[in-house]
Amino acid sequence: MNKSEAKTTHTLLKRIGAHFGKLENIGNLGGRREDGFDRPAWSHEETRAIKYIQGMAEKAGMVSSWDGVGNLFLTTPGHGNEIVQVGSHMDTVPAGGNYDGAAGIVCGLEAIIPLKPMWERLSRKLQLVIWRGEESASFNAVCKGSEAAFGLCHPDILLRTNHGVSLSEAITAQGFDPSFIAEKKPTLTPEQTEKIAAYLELHIEQAKRLQTDGVPIGVVSSIRGTVRLRIEVTGEANHSGGTPMGIRYRKDANLAMAYMQVAMHEACSYALEKGLDLVQTVGLLNDDEEFNKNHTRIFSNSLTKVSPYGYFAVDIRSNNNAFLAEYVKNTKKIIQEKAERFNVRVKITEILRLAPIEKLDPAVQHSIEASCRDLKIPFIEMPSGAIHDAAVVASQKKKNGNPIPVGMIFIPCRDGISHNPAEYASPEDLARGAQVLSNVLYRLAR
Image (cartoon, rainbow, N blue to C red; front, side):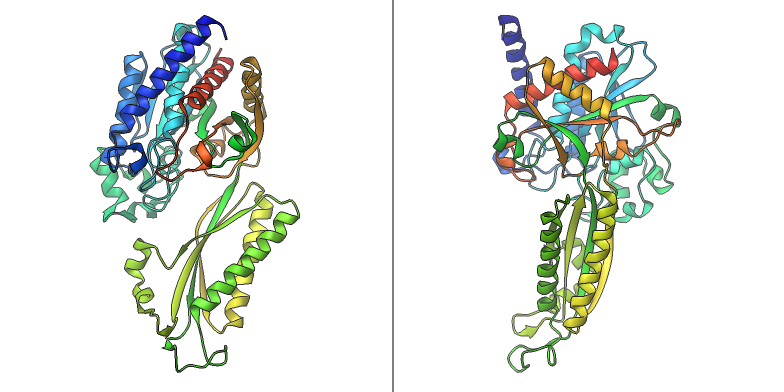
């Protein structure tokens, strides 16, 4: 690295540090980064974080515009009719970290600003997009802002609450219009969608493959889809001491759920042994605050009872759409079989189904890889296990029938930890990601 490059990198590190220094004062739960953050969707904290980036972008000469639900679009001046977008989100899970989403926005800003001397000469404009409400922790729905932009949100989500406030009320409180979601009306016009030449998203990996393998950049090849199920099991309350053991005498909801989960784990292990792409997580067990408000039977359970009722929720993900559908079908069959064996009743509710993006755009992926080679930065190709707004954009087709070209860049996060106060990405990894991203933007916009 020569003196000029070293100076540029030093300046970039300082700017990134300053941005995260500001963001650490927004939604912080205890005054230190390690205390965690809470910037729920359409909260004052999420809006403050977005407006901070807006101010920095406008100061650099970018033009800002809000859509009907509160997504922010920051665009460079120029004469190009098409746009190359880079985006992510600023909301967090409760007691989450400061890098999930925000890393992509900060790096996006710091990828666009160095190109300012060329803004007017580029064939395409550059645009930083801050999507509202990507995290499902608020209002139990993912990618709400990006889905609303394309008219994909189900109107029912407006009735869902977070800390007693409905999504409709939250959107209105931030000065935006929930009727776009109520009417499934896109906030982006067909003409605006057609102008998107490519979309990029940089994100922390949220796992530790990059750190473990010592590779600084992941080039994302696919995004896993998800099917989320809630399984409610109804047994029969009886005295824990007086009722003999065995399914002839007991209808034990908790016991049935335990066997269901073991059988599901065995099915998952078998699929993995065959080399199939799959992750499966039971993330809730009798403990969903919003669900329990309207399903108070859970509170009839007791230490001295045979359990009359219980539920759990499972998140199943794969980047193979046909396999995911077949696997979920088999999972439902396993659950029904275990319910019959243990003489309990079961209700299976599909909470969410998002199709995977089996392959991100090859041309954009090639541009990311070429940029890494330009900068002599090692990279590996890898799938994304998490859902991102990039998946929503990649699912949208243009007039020619082809999807919007989408690419993703992963950078390491310490120990792979995310959705956790300990979530952290180093300034060096952030700067490296911003430099790769800037190179890709230039390639796609020139």
